[in-house]
Image 1 (spheres, helix red, strand yellow):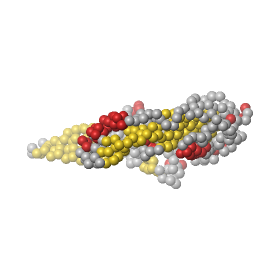
Image 2 (cartoon, rainbow, N blue to C red):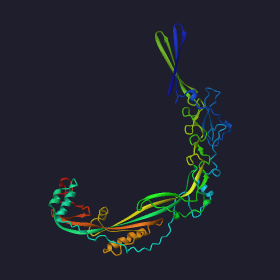
Image 3 (spheres, rainbow, N blue to C red):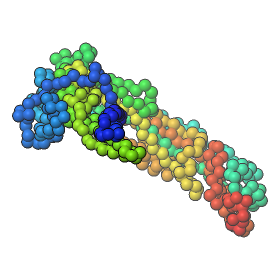
Length: 473
């Protein structure tokens, strides 16, 4: 903020002449503070005790000289008040390590978890032998061929309904086209779902707040895959974290050296920061404007002069430093790692992830793209759910047999770090009707597929607005 002080002095300068002297003082101050709100003065370190190897600019003011210019010194550390009980120096990493890995090296090793660190490590599941016969109990619910037959009138009606949903499709095309032939075919949709379990182990730490501790002295830690855990629902992605029994231990916090607090990042532990109003000098430059005027013979003459006058900073009371707003002058902040407790609980935790891996294959007898048939519904022919499923070796269509072999073999070797809990193999038949039509001496095709009787017509005539641009197509 800006403050002004004005004073006027009238002095006689001669016979019949009076000079008026106006003194205006203008001071720029960032923040106005009352004297009782200023921070208490601190004792500063003597200049001759500071290390001058690496220069850091610090402003020191001689309190005995009111208007003396500020002097500057070079130092490598901030000014620390006398008697300040700060945190240990972090320069010596051997005495105060701040890495959790060092804490793990001091702890006793857990049998079976020697290679476990702070990062999650996948645990290879044990080999499971499944000798169940997958062909004896396989049942097909329906015949391969679908019984729904599309007639010419029905095909035209379905196409009209599809054209009505498109703003720029001409309805006359569907009404006047000549349907030449309808081929009734089918496609097969093969879906394999594999429900797997993955386990990852890692050392974890949390603030110790009096919770129960299960130390290694209580017994040997069980193997990662021997810990019992079941998903809440099959064929649904989920995860769960569990602590390995007999692996917990209490260790001092590696971030704060068990003090529960860390040195303030803003003031570097001094509790004081440099005053931004005076830039740490304790002084501010005030503008002193002097205005004088004389009157002689009815003519008034004014003179104005501005000078820079140093003065004491009103924000920091001339000390050049203020109380740190981050730590409120304490010089330290609570440790966020241990929540100011000073101790951490270390233990090995297993992250269990259940996931569904899905593989689809479409076997089509027509020219319709397989990507179109993935979302279509059909009649269920077979649905099998077992710990391990095999390919459809006895199915009549060899392409379905080959496709089932491919996806089953793919899932058998695709998850080396996951254990297969359950597999589900389903086969559906989708009706696909290929309709051949003639429009303006052009012979084309469209398809009606799925139980919903969807339409796939990539070359529908008159697709532009009003059909003007594709009239001769």
